[in-house]
Image 1: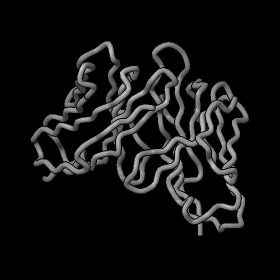
Image 2: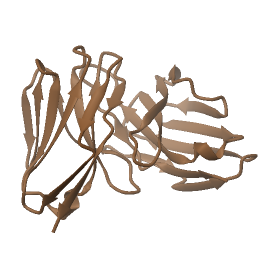
Image 3: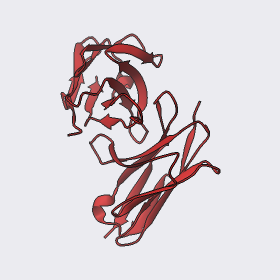
Image 4: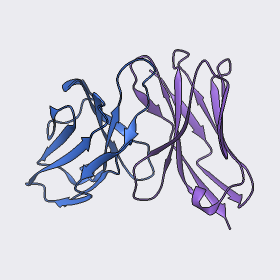
Length: 111
Length: 114
């Protein structure tokens, strides 16, 4: 089955700096890669996603890149703000639409 | 509107109690999911319903019993739970069709088993 690795487990950045979170996946058949943000006491919220036929996607301060050859994908957040502090999960989905999550990373944005 | 609602928000139950969690969506999604999430861990898939039929059971103990009475509603019936079942229970839904992999999560029910 699919295995998604997400490192490191924590990331701390200064407000205004950029944050990059990287994930790798194992199953070359995976074709959909969402990123979820989870704030304390809330459910995961989809923030951006990318399909395997696209290399990059951007939405305001957030972008995702995908390297199919290397089987890794990354979340880029620019001009970070304190409200970006949360746990971020990457995930991969194959043909059966089953989501495999990474372990999550706690992002802290220092004011 | 991409809202999935869950009730109750919090639930405390004893090991001999019977309770139910409820999940509702009105987006016309025909795939619905139950996940269990422990602190500082990713969600773990429990059950998947597709067109109101159970399609995946991830070897979940029988003290958890899912039900999908109609296309908008998903229940999780709980009986004789253990303290280690305390967790955040998340519901998600997904549209069905081509290029419809996105799962939308509800806010979860925080369950505590005493």
